[in-house]
Amino acid sequence: DFPAGYTGYHTYAETQTELQKTVANYPSLTKLGSAGTSYEGRALSLIKISDNAAIDENEPEVLFTCNQHAREHLTTEMCLHIVQRLTSGYATDPAIRRLVDSTEIWVIPSVNPDGSEYDISGGTFHSWRKNRQGSGTDTNRNWGYQWGCCGGSSGSPSSETYRGTAAFSAPETRAVANWVNSRVVGGVQQIKTHIDFHTYSELVLWPFGYTYADTAPGLSAAEAQKFQTLGKQMAATNGYTPEQSSDLYITDGSVNDWMWATHKIWSFTFEMYPKGSSPGFYPRDTQIVPQTTRNDQAVDIIINAAITG
Ligand code: 0X9
Ligand code: CA
Ligand code: CA
Ligand code: ZN
Image (cartoon, rainbow, N blue to C red; front, top):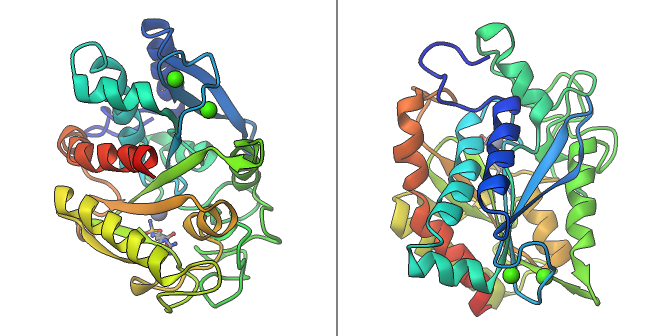
């Protein structure tokens, strides 16, 4: 469980309960499913939010993913906050209603539930990042585009950025990728925009991460420009710093590179609160409300971007 001062965070069981309560309270607006199962067999729960959520309507789709990295617990709260705000605000807030009615929004609150549960095991934090397969694979180095290409990951199982034995060797990465692949309907990827939430540093990041170059095969100057414009627009609302992800450091096998290169999904990473190593990965639960609501406008922008193309 979470230690004292952190009990406002959701454990895996509490996250499941929260999602189940949401679908009970908003049965026409939500649908609960799973993208697959983790290495240890936990559900990679997935909730859909839309009008007529039970039906696959012809509406642009948006994806939010959280908690690829185990210790980044604030991100799970970010995904739960998105679900809570879009459902509870639907009846009374015309702006929310418009977004929810014109899109299909998918939220995966924890891509790495095994790691997350391990990180809080025994009631203390363990600074755990990876999944729980062997010594752990960094799920955000295991995606299948330019996997292990460029010095942005490690081949050593003990490393914090271990890329795994092959692209998609981590069950969590494989499951989410397969699920995203399944959103190709009639040859068209339905998901248009995506944010993967991490902590910390207060950044808005866009592809590519595997190269310092601003453009590359599959990323034209006009597309790079659009990433930058959209990223800066979102950063202007939350005060984060916008930059290409390789400006932070080179990563290969990251989720954003795969989402863009494989599916042309406008895919961003947000590094949430705080800016620095104190409190680093472990801000008190009193930060949950301010730091998740801080991204409300940016979330609206990325949903709207799916509508406007
Ligand atoms: O290293 C990561 O995976 C992310 N930072 S974290 O401190 N949360 O581990 C940054 C990922 C940046 N994204 C890309 N380079 N594509
Ligand atoms: Ca709908
Ligand atoms: Ca659809
Ligand atoms: Zn992270």
